[in-house]
Image (tube, rainbow, N blue to C red):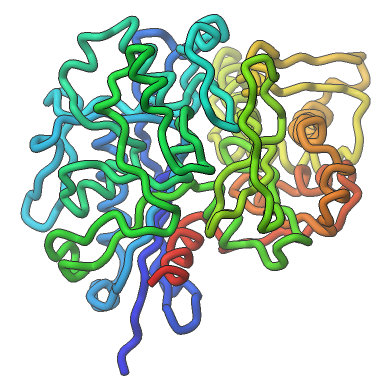
Length: 468
């Protein structure tokens, strides 16, 4: 009997990852990853707007899958997709995608059939604008970068932009719609909750509330439970047979936890890549309560998981992106001084120096992007003196600050009171950065096990095995 496989896909903020997973062993037998290089300028400037080119993301996705073994792709029996939550892309049904030979391509922004991807890092929705929107009937609050507030902003400020389109979803929902050539986008409850205005207990949009407020409800996708099938591959693609079921796209955080959680209820997962999250699975009987309009957004949120369960999550906007900005600043300073230093050398040097500095009195709060529960907070540095301004000290303090910020959002006592005994570390920034690892152990005072290989793409694929 020949082996069978599932394809797991993660459409991330900076890269696409794919895993070809052997169903019998639940282990990946081939992996590919590709940077999307999809960031594109926003007319609002980098402080307010954050956009990506959907066609470049789709091209990176196609390129990754095309490099997997063709003889194994012919034996794929299911496809699981996850990716960057919260963001939104709009498209015109009937002209958003097409085949060029066996290459399935999204239309470019210039065609007018597909918009930019407005990502979770987009800051066009100011606190004042968000306060002007109706309060959602949901246990989750609103933040800039969420899909529905972003479309609300366009409806109020750029209505002509919306007139070109008749569909909307996350970038992963668009990829799934393209694979299955769906007439209507299908969204999982995980991604619906990440958009705002979704009641995850009833499984419904706040449709009447949105319609009364003037929101173009035609853009609301059809929602199904996480793990459900959105459709089937319309035609054979890169050897994967036509008719192969494709799951509704999931959240990358949920899939990252799913791929790595060894002991639900006893382990928490800390995932640091572009951003940073710390989360654990709540008991089966937990149900979140609808938030009232006068309640502040909590630093701990409850995200839909699988089979009716929820993740308790501290989701920070500031993670590896803070360190990446520091590296860019160092490169810029070197350039201004007349030197050119490759980025990989800067990374290696600061991590070596940071590891050599086991402690520092310098205090850096690296919340450069604010936080969803406190959007107006910004980064700061304090307790500066001549003895703590070395490169190693600054690197150590930055890493210390990333973890200290998570500790404020989800304290150690909160974890322990819910039965958590150990933290599992995942994500590209966490697995490559010994300084971050040491700070997690030091500040949380819990055993840390750093895992490699269990990425969100693996979780997306494994989630299909639960529902085949």
